[in-house]
Image (cartoon, rainbow, N blue to C red; front, side, top):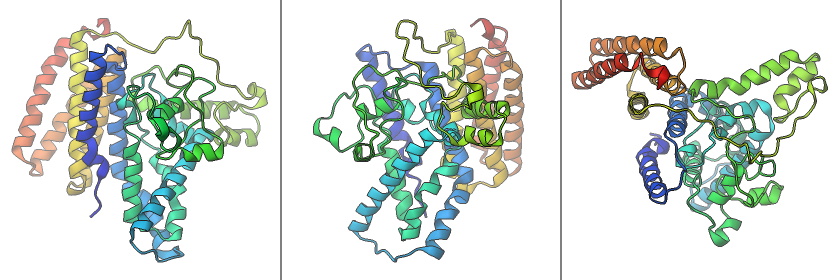
Length: 405
């Protein structure tokens, strides 16, 4: 049985986020904003949900090559684990680097870079669709003959390692800066400063960047985010907005070759007709402003409730996905995603918040009725029904006020 180390680590993630939040509050460091943190964590929930539905399909390529084409029978020894750890980290570097240098891959990876803050919630801000192509980069390990379960284990720990480096509270780590990917190195990677863009792609070992010419030391202040800010808390839009830009550029391109190049060239590439390559602009320090929206306490409380509901249901699916049939899983995932979508709409004061939230309640009550009919635990159904009813009362209270919040 495969162990989902990411799911098991979720409680630890939130404990560490709580510790960092308490520390920054005590030190009066403005590293967290509630709306930004909710947006980051919502992306993480969505990424895990999509991954649950796709995990078997995506892993079949590795399994097929290992079972039919592997070159060696590799024994399970400590040296095998060490070599595979280095191999996973090496291919992660190239996957990550290509995700910054090929537009079609950047369209997925860009999600992780959209936040204009830098804290531990940003580590959980993951693309919903990046996993659809990332596995391809690791296929040489299957061809060599590394066991799939060993690969999954070390790949998970490579991901887990990168959680803690998304912090501004740790400055320099001395001699370890020459070996490991550290918070300082990864802050550079998340910078939108021109000198920092496309640098420090490492997962665990920074030596790959030093070897292949993509290393940059943290020097001037880092400005986080992407060069064209997302300016939205909408989790769905965050995953598709760059695709929309690419498709529009391709439509405006005359030649077929240019239409193809739009998707395979680096970010910033445009046909000569559309002005040619556009380099990242220097940071306008004087006029620099982070995207933000204002909301009343009442509105923010409702947004938090929406997020907590999505978090609870998403966490439930992480642990019980394999025990549920397809239809219950689809209903739960859809309801969770709509909950995060309405949360973003509320924070942005979108006019479509009220109708989409009404749809969410209708779907929620239908889902509970469906679960009741297929014999779900009545306590679980009763608790969710009570939460739905209480939130519905809150919704009718907030509905006429939210635009002026």
